[in-house]
Structures are given as structure tokens and as C-alpha cells.
Amino acid sequence: MPLPFLAWAAIAAVGGMGAVGHAVAREDQEEAERIARRAKRTYEDAKSSLMSAAKKAEGQLESLGRSKKEVYDRSMKRFMNSYERIQDIPDKNFPGMDELRNFKITPSDMIQLREVGSIFDAALAAGAGAAAGFAALAANGSFYAVGSALMADNIGGALTGIGRALSATPLAVIAAPVMFFSALSASMKADENKEKARTMLAEAESKAEKMKTDETFCRAVGERAEMFRGLLEKLDVMFAPCVGRLENMVCRKAGYNPYNKISGYELSSSELALCAVTAGIAKAVKSVLEVPILSGSNTIHPRVDGTITKVSGSLPALMDSFERL
Image 1 (cartoon, rainbow, N blue to C red):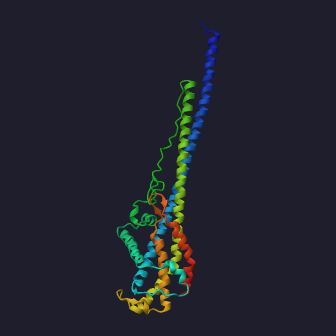
Image 2: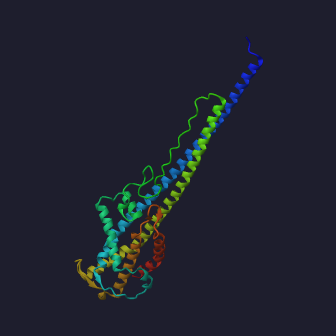
């Protein structure tokens, strides 16, 4: 028996609603997938940028660590060995001496310099002279502060606290529903997926902001490391030749036996000037050698910027005194 007209009309209407519902659901699902892809891209771009900044900062710290070790071994050890053979150096005025008053080296400075050397030597004897070790030397003042390389998957390592534990919940791809039992359920499922995608995007953006903060810190660390390395290079341009002249002067007067001493009162004015200038530069070098870049987990050491300002400000006076010799 043929179905009544109204029955056929009802079936047609339901079918039409189903088609519309599936179209709406498909659009919602496509939007959900677009949002999910945007969330994943936001997170991955921020992570990639942070990893790049952290790797660069580690390289800058490594360069500073190597420079510290080289200057200490090449110039500072020789300075200490010669300067400690001179006893009772008189505090005598000469041209340029006023500028060196703030860089007068003391017996306690010499003790501290020996301690710095002990840290360096003990670390190398322990086999910690790898790239991460030099980075840790610059960052924390000793090779022992950090043992692993920086670029681990969770961005831990030599830069303590930078990007640590940034492992976010994985951004899973939202799977498209295979089939819909009705237009209504399909629409609800798509809405649900769209809401999940929006939540994912909000989480990705939040973590990206945190990674941007860590990236800024990485760049700040790297900039300070470069400043310190630049200061060391400028200082050693003066320090190394002064140390060579000091060695020659001491050996000429006291011989090559390291236990033989000379009195500062036996020195001429020009020799006393050499002692004062070399010691003044040594004090400035010490300031750079002993200050770590990092303090605690993720802050710049409070003495870093002050040391940069003080030593940078002293460079013209030190250079002037050096050129007077």
C-alpha cells in the first residue's frame, strides 16, 4: 500500500535536515582541525626559537669559559708567580697613578686568585673540560655546577633553569569522526572537537609566552657572556705584554730561582710603575674571572652588570697607564 503523502514529506524533511546537519558538522570539524594546526604551529615555532636562542647562549658561554681559562693560564699565573717575588712594594706616585687607585691588588686578592686557579685545575683534572664544562664555568663559576650538555630534549643543561621542564602536554591531532548516526549527534561531536581545539590553542599560546620569556633570558645571558669575553680580550692585550716585562724584570734582578725575592725598594720609578700598572690590570682581570654569569637557577648574577660598568669605565685609564710605560 503506498505511503501517504504526509509520510513521504516527513521522510524527505528529515533527510534534508540530515544533509544540512552533516554540512554544518563538516564545517565545524574543518575549523577544529585548522585551530588544532595553528596551536601546534604556535607551540613548535616558539620551542624552535627558544632552542636556537639557548644553543647560541651556550656557545657564547663556552667561548667565555675558554677565554677565562686561557687568560688565567697564559697571563694570570705568570703574573702571580712574578709579582709574589717582590716584597714591600712602596706606594709611590707617578703619572697616571691616581686612575689606578681603585685597582690596587691586595694579598687577599692573590689568595682568591689562587683559589680560582684551583677550581679550574681540579675541574680539568677530573676530565670536565668539554664544551658544556666551559659553558658551566662561565655560567656558574665552576665546571662542577652543571654536568650535562645544554641541548637536551627538555632544554635543560648548562644554562641552569633556562627552559627547564618546558615539556608541554603533546598537542594531539583531533581525529575527524568516521561517521555520524544523525545530524544532531554529528553537530554536537564537531562542536566538541572545536572546543577541544580552542582549549589546545589557548594552552599552546600560554606555553609560547613562557618560552618567549625564557628566550629573552637566554639572549640576556649570551649578551653578558659576550661583554665579559670582550672585556677579557681588551684587558689581556695590555696584561700579557706587561706580565712579560714584569717577568723579565724580576728574573733580571732575582734570577730564575722562584724562591728568590727582591725588595720593592730596590726598584726604579719606572719599574715600580710597571708593577703598579700590571697589578692594576690584574685586578681588573680578576673582577671578570671570578664573577659567574648566573645566580641561582634563572637570574643574572647581581655583580655582572656592575662589573661590566666598572671595568669598562676603567679601560681608558688602564690603557693610558699602559701606554705611559
